[in-house]
Length: 195
Image (cartoon, rainbow, N blue to C red; front, side, top):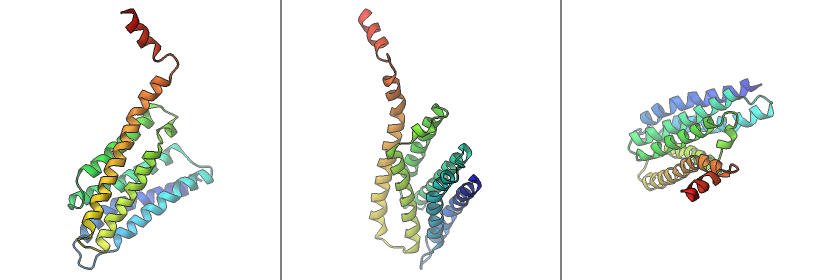
């Protein structure tokens, strides 16, 4: 049942591997090129379909979730890194994506069996923004022009900030959980008062 959803994730992973080269080869073509936009469309469509399909067919698995995450980060980080290498984005943008994804991985691994706790709204929003940024990079090679500079600057800033926020929320999670445990603050107070 999950084979169909896994196949969609594998298709996204293949598009993710092809996208950086397609962007790099297409950036200087005078008439633009459509391949990067086609690869981005494959990435978005498969990302929208694989999870719901797996859940609907009753075949959502841990390996499917890992494959989905690997395909997502390969896709958006590959696009953003290529954008930075081509001088379209500052390197701090793919850096922020990598840090946010790393924080998500650490939070997911910290509590085995409870990966859903690593999901946050801001993390989801960061993922959406990351895909939109990849789409903007693909659009740049379809219709090259100077007007993209300010658009990419603004989009890069949004991606940087929202991924930074997502990483901060993940980093704050263990602190919140520790404080929420019964008696977590009492030991510290009793030590201070007896000193």
